Image 1 (cartoon, rainbow, N blue to C red):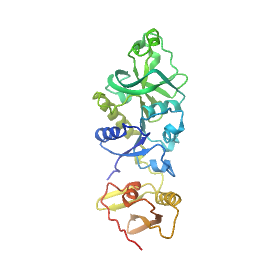
Image 2 (image 1 turned 45 degrees about the vertical axis):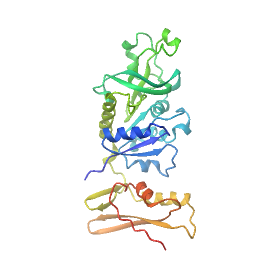
Image 3 (image 1 turned 90 degrees about the vertical axis):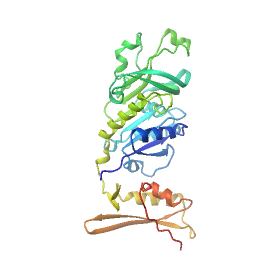
Image 4 (image 1 turned 60 degrees about the vertical axis):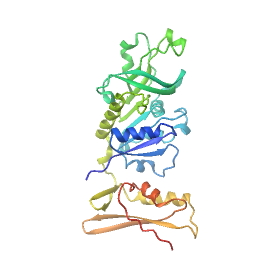
Length: 328
């Protein structure tokens, strides 16, 4: 049985996060796990191995602030042998661009709930979507360093990587005039960047919100296109470390290696100092290979944790389990 695909949503404490999860699970037909950007993960790269792709979501703040983007930055700086397909949305998009040399500066006025049509290259995540009616919720915009002489629609250099950001290829722009927002745009209309892709890595970003109820059906098509591209680039089928397999009926649960157990034990142990009266949980994984069986276990101070949260941390929440819980 092939491994079940899962998407990680890095949540920057945005009110739209639940809507993004619903969109991903509807369009991509996958389980989506949410993790806040400031969550401490002992070995984040190893944690990512259980996912087929990651979404860096919207949120408040500026991409230059590590406090505002948190774990986003670790996605864009993954080593080549640990790359994971990623999609940045709004702040996640700005974070990707900023990491690769772009400027992120204020708009003349915030664009909160503004619906506009974006023009695309009709390629990559916009395959079959030359135009899309989308909803924007942002007060900052991304500047890749393009010069924007008139007329905008025929400005071919807008679709090429800029000298300032050679690793980012523009995929979509909002070319509608913003004269109604600021008089200066009436004299020098500018296109606002709406989407990019990395020229060599499976990283994509969109400024608009595809999960918004006011975005048209093409927004789902864009997400579906991204997921198909992610599946072709995902390292899910690679295994550069021993794989533990636990069989429950005909279902196989795979964990990249046994250090997942020891990492969890050590992180919980350091967060919850052991005391004589603190109950412990013995976490065990078995591996069946031929006729031999091996069990790896660790005693973990429970503290305020419960059994469901432990199972979820180990990726077992979706399977039928037998939990033996006893008190000394």
